[in-house]
Image (tube, rainbow, N blue to C red):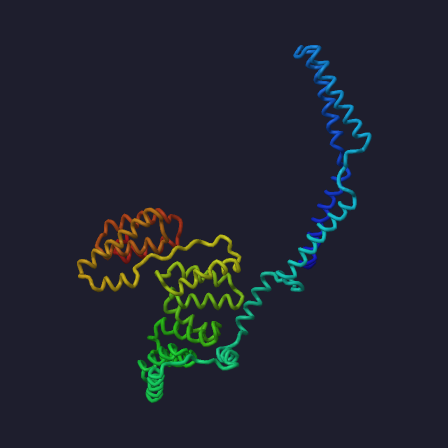
Length: 408
């Protein structure tokens, strides 16, 4: 039975229940005078009881009986005359039932037509996973995506004449010196600045070829980014491979994690993309543009991934670029004092707010560098107590203790 049929039957059942309540209420409704009559009779009986107990005198009892009897006669006359309305006429009740049925059933159908997917067959989880894997395996290559994106041809931004001349000279120089690593690095950078992303990633491919095994994670991440930008955000198999290479060299490389999560969303696996983005966000330094991009989209991705208790990940604490520039101008003694201040801030935050195993490990390692061995041991013991039973966290703490030279 399709979801549409279930929806309509549920709406119809609700309409029938509401209509039955309306019709039943009309049949069982009695005149207000009948209720008044029962009340007056009970009051009359209570007068006799009060007189028998001596609560009121005979004269007062006669006066109250007379008043209640008058009200009883008036209520009975009202019932006999049929002057009390027994509710709305039958046609009004039937019309109300029809309106309710039309609103509930018609509204449910109209809403499903607009927001649902009428005619779409059931898609169990196993089938959706199979479809996502097929989509990932059969998605267009980089060349196919570029060919589709260039119809009509993309217009490059207008460059300043002097800059355009310098860029042309750089192209000619690199073409004449195909093994010049620095030349290809500059060419990739300036082609990207000019918005010519296909030429930029081709130059970056040559950078990686010339660098060999020494190519860092950033080189592969830049290659993937320029591939992705050249096709308007689509992550091709070639771009995915470049991202994998970047993460192989640096598992916590933020931009590579961002684009890999984006690729998982594109192939129908928002659940994996969400986990990748959460891990990336935990390590995101302050002000990282890819970290801010993840924050702006994380709530929507969590909804698509079926996560309704998404963690609130605060921005990572750490020095900004201004802090780093200021530290470079300090004397060794001033720099040491600044480091101690940052370590103390981290220690205070962990003591009051707690933190991840990585935060505790960072504090232990920093104390080891500062030569505060006993304090590092105390922090380690506290961390072992906090994460007791968490094998993975304890391994991180032990590794930090070994780095600090306080392993026992």
